[in-house]
Image (tube, rainbow, N blue to C red; front, side):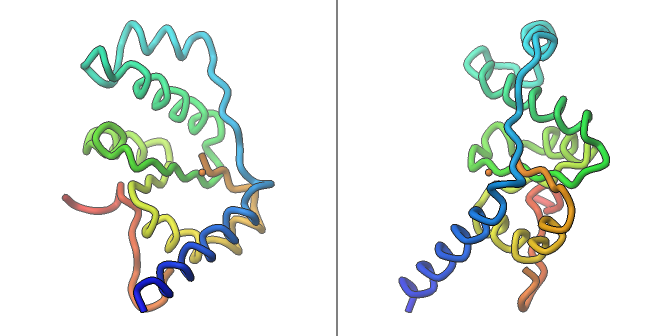
Length: 138
């Protein structure tokens, strides 16, 4: 039973990604983004510079498209799921997901709206409401 449910969820997720493929946006980095990463990093450890640069690119992109719905998925919750980072996501209108199950639920709920609008994804309310990771209290 578990394998059947898992396979069904995976198939639904792949179907949703196929539909979203034409709506996804590749985020290009800018020289200023790299400078800010080096001068004023969001993450403190030297080993986190790559993640810091990725985060900066995502935030810059979100600010440039402030009117559009945005979602970001990364299972790297150690860096991208930190409370201060989740608060920054909220400030720029990003819905963050740190696990695929919550992303799948959000996609189910928002798929029609995503298709109808030009939603940018950086990557259910069936019986219960699933929240984005930046809406959850830890």
